Length: 352
Ligand code: DOR
Ligand code: ZN
Image (cartoon, rainbow, N blue to C red):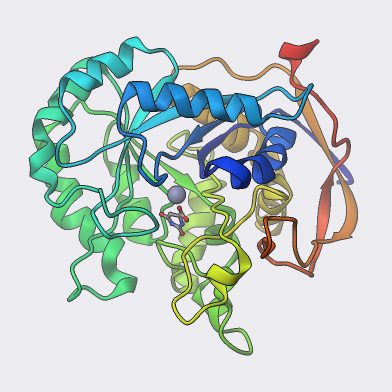
């Protein structure tokens, strides 16, 4: 197959940051995706409907003229989030979900939740309002090995949460393990997003000929057997598994450091990376539903009606993209990709 035309996809898990960083990265996402679920882990985090509205306005203001893109906002859960905010969020049409970060789990998670049970009042309100809960599913206890943190979260946090709130709709974000795939498959009202890096790479990529900080994200890449389970889930045609890049820009100096930040930047070439993963598994025909149908279906939103075309045109991923003084290194920088979006200026149907 040399050409691939898909219904325009959406990104169901994205970090856009703020200020100059937002301006630098937003055009890449808007070029590929019609909408994105925007993560709230800013400094300070986006905790209230009012903060989400202001952030949404800043995102729309940062869009280059003529580009269409709809940011779908999320709220950042803290120990002190009042349950009433959930009903305000539901009433504000632009807030689509609430994000749970365990305190200290990842970038800008200091204000996250210290004890998940503290949030039961909020979860009850979310269940009533039918507002989805998005989970960064890792425990943070220092005694738990970094490669086991997702599995332990499922056993010790998610299973009891599911029992307490059986009707709450949940997305287990950026899943990385066989255990997560199995749990999502066997549990009602729970879906999962999958990133390009977790579909394409095992933890070996972190150590290919030396230490590779640009492959470091959280949850961390796992063993090859886990990667294979993720690919199997992605290509299964099961609507519980859909696209969420977790594209997370950090300046080069913050990644190439003695204590480097977690996050892979894939907004530049996300769809091409997914196409490669699906093609390697012999399942390009399953990409469209994964990228463009199952996400909006889960969020009860209409599917996009315009299309995007990829062609087989080998190209070299740039070594670096403009990003303040330090630059931004995209995932798999300097290496080749076979799929390429045919027209960069393709606009969502809403514009025409
Ligand atoms: O690798 C990651 N980067 N994982 C996260 O959960 C957060 C993200 C970020 O914001 O940089
Ligand atoms: Zn993320």
